[in-house]
Length: 92
Image (tube, rainbow, N blue to C red):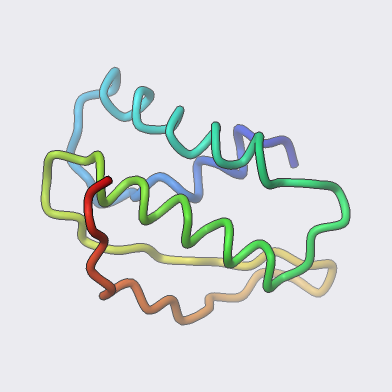
């Protein structure tokens, strides 16, 4: 799976934005993934990076952020995981 298809799972699907705006917000997450992703990443590190991405989206989206649906893909299949996203993020 390439980084762009992985990113499709990170950008919140419930956000009603125009197509161009949604693509702009993906770049915020791409910069985080470029910096922190590596081939030997484990589950905990992946969740930490996901937290960084969602925190950045909360800071930059000019709408009420409704949260995330997180699915983990492994060799054994796909499963949904609980993702507590109620933390308030302070602006930079």
